[in-house]
Image 1 (cartoon, rainbow, N blue to C red):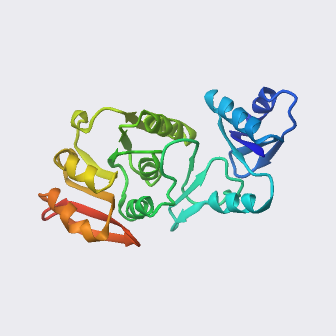
Image 2: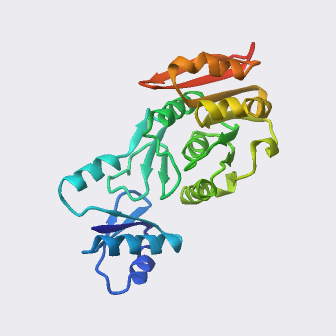
Length: 270
């Protein structure tokens, strides 16, 4: 096994010093990102080392050292690019991202790296619709991937909420990893305590949660804003949209078993 620690050129020496006598290698994968690779013969020991490093605030994971499992790992950690405006990549990915547009890197923890269809559909909407300067609310933020993508695309401010404290903590870490922590408020506060309005509301939380939170989701949206919800079946799209009245559906994206809806107040078009 190999422990991979995502760091920077300035911090790589300190990471290697923290590892003591363990042999390590520093790999350059971007203008800022450096990876410290630490071979560990025992899988259990590798997992314990990575866990300890994460508890100390480092972005550390384990990966296979060779064979088909390594090939699968390399495919899984390949950067995702959305047009010419945005790219998503794990911080510990060994793929080069020097020339990737609008790069957002994601560390350990939290759900969502842009690969799942329900997430990807919303990222595509953000790429299409963010114009700059928006105040964004991300409901069920997971890793923070949607809100941070909005910021990279030009939004001004993000409020990210989740009922899972570990997701909120992952969002905060990822905001700091991308130098965006000063523009991000991540909290476990319930939606009814969040003060709007927001120009953009995104919620990748599934049909049941969207229906349950529908009145509060609508309350948080500014009169001329737009909302995008995902994690629902295409066959239930119109039913879900009905619970979000007086918003009206203005666009729908689908990918296999998943759909994302875009809604606005009646008479508002972008």
